[in-house]
Length: 400
Ligand SMILES: *Cc1c(COP(=O)(O)O)cnc(C)c1O
Image 1 (cartoon, rainbow, N blue to C red):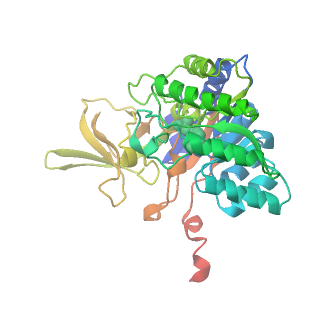
Image 2: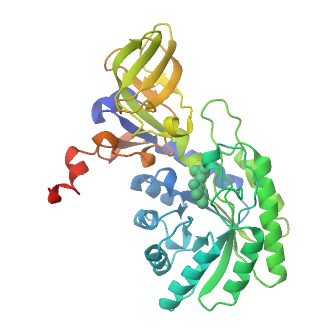
Image 3: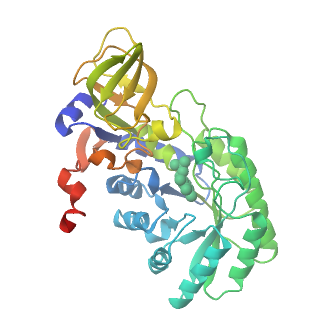
């Protein structure tokens, strides 16, 4: 049992709480599924980029999948060894590419032919060889929310098979590029195995045809995307997932790299918010809380469902919109959610908030971001203090 009331009292609200033991259990269940096979789990830092969270995964042997040089720095600072750090993303700047090469990380995932040229040019300037992998867009519909679908030609991510092949050939002929991997990532919150298997088969076939022309790659990077249960979704079992990938790879000797984000952190995180007011507009019931879309944007952005638990309230539940103080009608944590009558200072626990929660937060409406707390072996500790007004204006006041 997590002592939510004590945590809210100690640290105030709104508050993010992460169960580090639950994160470890998720990590180990996936690691176990790939046992007996050379594999690296590279935690997708964007899901929850708190340094203490990244350090926690690093201590379990995790690598890191990063989508900006800032995330690469976080990973290295948190103790992820450089030989397990990957740099992905469609729009890397020159300075980011340069720093990634100089940091000697495992590889850079390329997402276009134009990017390959930039990386080659920068590696030449540095008079070194850049390790690369190419993100293939297998044109598979992952059957998830369109905003988090990434493996269709309509999405901005990756390159077509034919372009990938051209790029590997070009890299082979370059003294400044070293192709070490192949990558795909078809989307997030995936709950069906079939599209992942189909994508793996397509990319494994490309691996075979590259091998036939003497381009041998060491790493088969299957991206992340494993879905979690927010409500009643049936999710993919780690073992079935691993078996599907390994089946696609039959006869090929490569290290499998998996980049889970949400799977490791979503259900290990809670967002605590306090009731400010109840109100009724005609027939419509609202509860106004101290947490808002700037803290947790998933409901507003994706219409995402989060389970909400009211602590210590009895009484008959009725449908209510749980809304924050931000001046947007899109500012809600839940709509038509059954909750009992609530009073000032009652505590609500928003579940499954450990991934794409704090990290997608903003300072909109000049609201400081929440504190973050870790819970491990029954002990809690602050891992990010609450932002103050001074923090919010620090970069502006000198121009006043
Ligand atoms: C976002 C992302 C991930 C992690 O996705 P999850 O759905 O959180 O597992 C992994 N790899 C890449 C390249 C990503 O962009």
